[in-house]
Amino acid sequence: MVIAVNTRFLLPGKLEGFGYFTKEVLQPLTAKHPEHQFHFFFDRPFDKSYLFSSNVQGHVLSPPARHPLLWKYWFDVKVPQLLKKVKADVFLSPDGQCSLTTKVPQVLVVHDLGFLHHPESYQTSHLRYYKHYTPKFINKAKRVITVSEFSKQDIVQQYKVSEEKISVVHNGVKDIFAPIYFDEQTAVKEKHTGGLEYFLYAGAIQPRKNLINLLKAFSVFKRRLQSSMKLVLAGRLAWKNDEFLSLLKTYKYKDDVVLTGYLEEGELAKLMASAYAFVYPSLFEGFGLPVMEAMKCGVPVLTSKASSMEEISEGTAMVFDPQNVDEIADALMRIYKDEVGRKLLIEKGKIVAEKYSWEKTAEGVWEELLKAVSNR
Image (tube, rainbow, N blue to C red; front, top):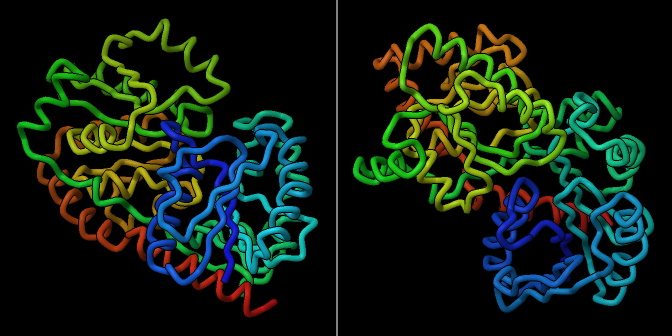
């Protein structure tokens, strides 16, 4: 079988979201199926380390597709040409977009419909594109994968899609996310917070992640408990950050807030495993992978009741209304004062996190590829 894959988001040193999913699924998938040929479609020169095994061939389809007009051209002109050339049996697209012009069966991964629920978090041109084309992509694909039952039901309700067309294939968690020894934790704390304990958020810094409410809640926490606790925000400044950055400039406790910028996953895993607690106040997620990564690191999780995070944590996270600053602050104070409850969350969280592996994710994706070809 010849399997073509959209690998646009395999960007060296910039792996996030789609890129992580693509890498962690394709690495075990290509190795486990050496009898099949894989063709990876990039939109710019690529790092050859992403050609994970000898049965993988990389191709560059220019121009780089980083704008809606170029997305359309890339998927509907360039992709079909190469699919025909390599005689692909199936096309896998992990970033929510697919070709509307090819006859090759496609497996589409739709992680979430955040653009419908929180349009303020998206650039106007991107928002229009997603709203117009996402239902067309879902209709065109032979099979649709999503990452949680929450997202599946959202897709079904929004676009009246048959449930049989959509399969839930959960994200996995890498083994690099694991507890670390006390002396390693000490070194991490010395590097980032001068040796002090900290709450951690990890992810892109953009409006949907709800970090302004986290800052407000952290203010309440600091004011009430007079603690030396720091707040570490690990992730790149993504988009629409003017309000967040403006608030931070005049923030009373700005000296207690640490922005690390983008971190390589090895460093992020250590930072996560050294945190006092992980706080993820996102307004909307299809899965919320950092929640599970923190649990696997042996760190208690505080997260939103909204979207999928409550589903995947299975009652082992402390949850709050992300729109309610007092509820977030109360969760921070409770985890800080209740050491017994904190340890209980840690132990329960590690058990739940063990269920999630990228090998299982890759197996689920493979099953969908086979279904798409058999339905041809």
